[in-house]
Image (tube, rainbow, N blue to C red; front, side):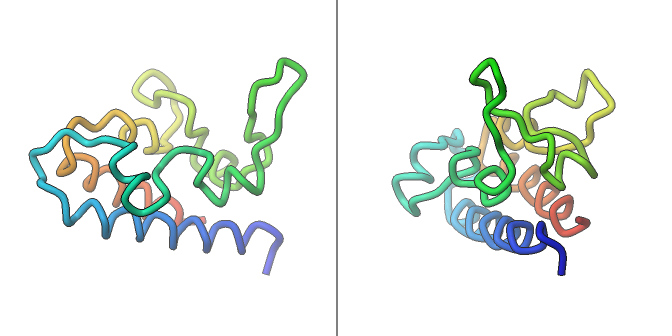
Length: 117
């Protein structure tokens, strides 16, 4: 087991919990990060992500960077819009989903990306 296995496994569990909660929401309702967070105490933001907690570091400009994150190394950064780059990380699409139905579709892709690590 490598040093990154534990946060990856925890991140998979985290995304499973998020998806489970989202599947109980009205699919056509606008997705809201704060409604998820207030209901289950976590959401898809970096502050709740086990990978971000383990691998995110502040750089000299006081900006968080994830250079050593296994997701960034293998798929791409969560911060990049992959429609405009070769980054394939699906977090951008999760975050920019309009409804819970779309959020679930994108989150399941994100979950598969995590499982591939």
